[in-house]
Image (tube, one colour):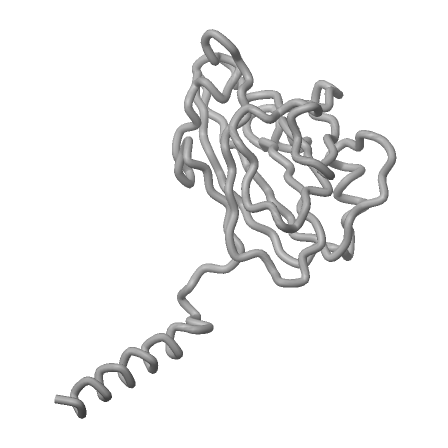
Length: 183
């Protein structure tokens, strides 16, 4: 009996060790409790939200690189007329490395976590702007989360283009979530 218990404990320990560094385990990821990967974004997080439009979705991430010093979030679309120039819905940078989520409805500057800073969306406003494709069309919306090896020293509200330039050479890893919305 004692021998069987010892073998069982050894087998369990070996299974845990084998699971460490498992090649099949996903790396850095981003997800939303509001919608799944490549699934429809609920209307409440779009321009069609009722009674209040443009409520930012909850986002959570896991397994960032150990060397992460900050995160940058850029939500954009390259659908329809935005194939060549992405439509940017939300930009947040210098998200502290200890955070693992952004709660729902924090799409305005005053609602962001301490340390996080807003950038400008396609309307040149420092806030979340929900998906709003033309009637009869469905667009895809990409939620990019970048893990950086630094915090960015930017004293203004950058566009996504300016932010991507500032991040050049500082991105350790990237996670992406795609949602869809049709009107």
